[in-house]
Length: 298
Image 1 (cartoon, rainbow, N blue to C red):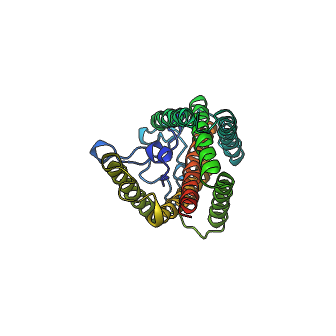
Image 2: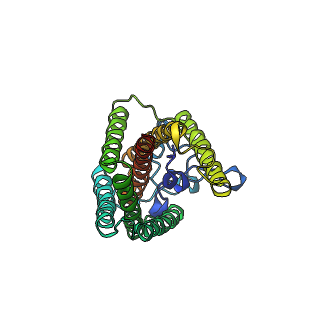
Image 3: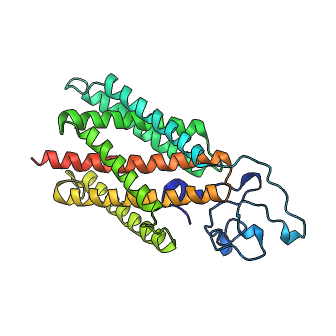
């Protein structure tokens, strides 16, 4: 099962150091990456290697399996610590941007420009990490820092010029979604399977395509394009965006849970932290947009 999160869906956990990863996307000729077509299939009786897709499998060559080079295994604590570090960097830089980049009439243009520049840099860093074979802590933390600058400027503008208290409301909403999905996932109310994954990916693709079309109309036609991100329709699409973010969280929880269960390398906790941070930023942005729309229409 690959997450809909762009980090996990691109590559999954790595295959380095003798570990078979989660990415089962077909390559040229229809072959699947990894040693098993479906690493999450039920374990086969008498085959201990089917239970752990991270174990080396040299049985085809007739040689006994070798012990993995890397002995450290990812744990939930590793994921929590690295996610906390990544979000901590993002929050600190957001607070600094809020405090040091004024948004008064004389400086709002410059501050907003810095925020947009930071967002573009963060986007590039996110894409670079998504296509790397291994997690790069420095790259992930740099992404968090630049994304924090953007969110700090944007949140300050919305909070002080459109809706007082919008940033805190968006934070509370994001935390509520995270907690709600986590409880629902652990309680088994959300069943993450291939059907769920396919539905979420199809919905996400449609959502992104509509937003791209809306952006093109806005660029060439002015205004808000087709109105997907403003007014009543904007609120509807904001709610859809939050629901998609909640689905991303469920897929990410499944990815992390399977990684821990199958003994993914410890360094992969950075990828989990990166993916969860991307999803939480997505949800926060959708909440902030909805709050801004509701208050601007007053």
